[in-house]
Amino acid sequence: MSVALHLLIMVIALAGWSWTSPVSEPEPRLISARLVSPEPRPSPVVDEQDQRDLEQERRQQEERERQQEEAERRRQQEQARQEAERQAQARQREEEQERQQAQARERAEQQAREQEAARQRAEAEAKERERQRAEEERRQQQEAERKAEEEKRRQEERRKQEEAERKRQEEVARQEAERKRQEAERRLREQQLEALADQSNREREAEARRQQEAAAARAREAQMLTESEKYQSLIRERLSQAWYPPSSATEDMTARLQITLLPTGELANVRLVSSSGNTAFDNSALGAVRSLTRYPVPSDRDTFERYFRQFTIEFNPQRLR
Image (cartoon, rainbow, N blue to C red; front, side, top):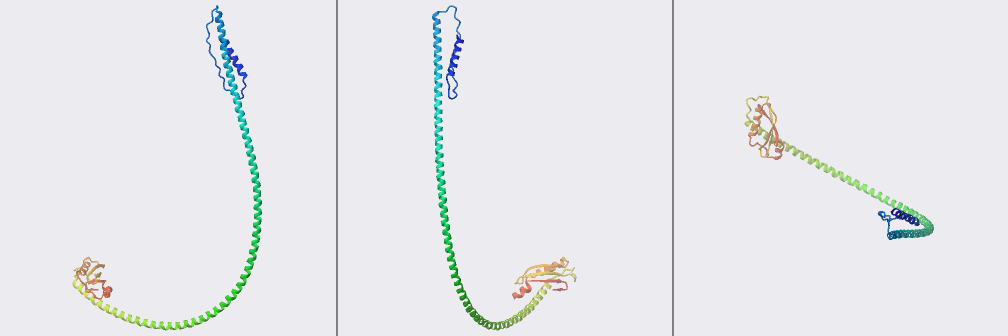
């Protein structure tokens, strides 16, 4: 009985599967089945009432399964119908979109045609305006050329008049310039003669001043030289008195010293310029120079600066120079 029941369920399921024809691929079917455990085989002696109960229960079970299968079939048909309606609506929406797109294309094409017509009209109007502008420019250019030619003629007449006036004024100016040149040359000659006379007088006066200044300079130089010789003689005398050459000194030994004095006669510095070759001889000469606290110098500042600010003196056993 269990095997027969399962076979019956499979037949009903296959029959219900073939009855449906969905538009789209249906969802996987769910088959509800109940496992019936094999009952123990009845004894050879079966109660007739029990047999009827089992038969009725089997028919009820089959009815319930048939109703479930019918409900499943209807559900799938409803899903297929809804899917068909959805696809129909999608097709309607697509057709509406295509219709709207076609209308939009038509409107765009109409607008493009209108724009092209407007562009052509604008180009025609622009060409007409350009033609009119070119015509106006040509007319203005002709008028300008006529005016320019008239102005050129008037300018030429004015130029001729101005040229004639310029030549007349140049002639007047030339005559006036010639008169002024002659007058300037006359005044220049007079000024040159006066300048030559003044220059000759100035040269004579300058020569007289130079001669007087030269005579005064020579007199001053002679006076300074005389006075410097006097004080140089006094300085050599003072140094001779203060100098004690060493016993090793010979007549060939000569030490040359550079002496720097202050205007008061005080010694500012002494430096050995040329050595005698004998240290004792050189030191004795340096000691003699440093031993004098004050040197006899002239009171005249020019004589001092020229001859006694800085001078050299030579120490030799026979002489001082």
